[in-house]
Image 1 (tube, rainbow, N blue to C red):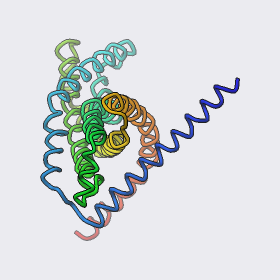
Image 2 (image 1 turned 135 degrees about the vertical axis):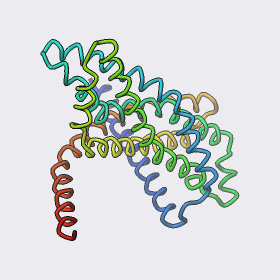
Image 3 (image 1 turned 120 degrees about the vertical axis):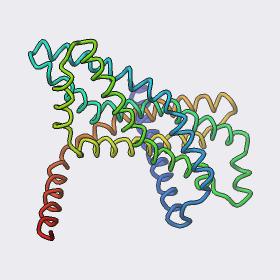
Length: 278
């Protein structure tokens, strides 16, 4: 009876310790950015190419099949309820709000995040990070900042692109395979989708990009014990990043839903001010 309690206590302590370490790493990145500005631009461009351009093939394949399967399941169920004509907009809303950002984050946590952890872990166990320090450079500035900047910038781009491809694939499935009305489906999507839907998607994807970079880079720099340690750190980073994405998705979804009236009020206020000026 005592062992499970002890294990649970140790797991909770480890979770708090890791969360604190990730928060401290984020603080160090922000401090370095404010103090030194943007440095190592070539490395940032290299990471942007790796995260963004290198991920387009897997993003396209994932978005096409996920959108098609999602639309197929939704249309079948909505036809049973007699509202099959609303399947397109329902699919587009859910892809934009939740499944697009989360699915792309999970995919990139596997492709990009594991690469970050393995690369930094290998550098750490072979003392390359100590060599960087000996040249008077900070691993946070030289290694983590470019990767954090790349995921911060490219995750929203990849997510919006994936949502667009997924919606097109879903509409193709509904119209071509299921026999839905193309004009009504597309018209409903154009009328029902609002700017705040895309804002939600971009905010979520930005937060997920930051999480992936921080968790995976931190695990890489903490790797010890040669190849086995790097493998364990990579596995732990992938599991931790995917779990954090799912947990944070719920928190951010609730916050953004509660904030929508405030957004609408702000937009209405700006519209009134512009009408008054003109």
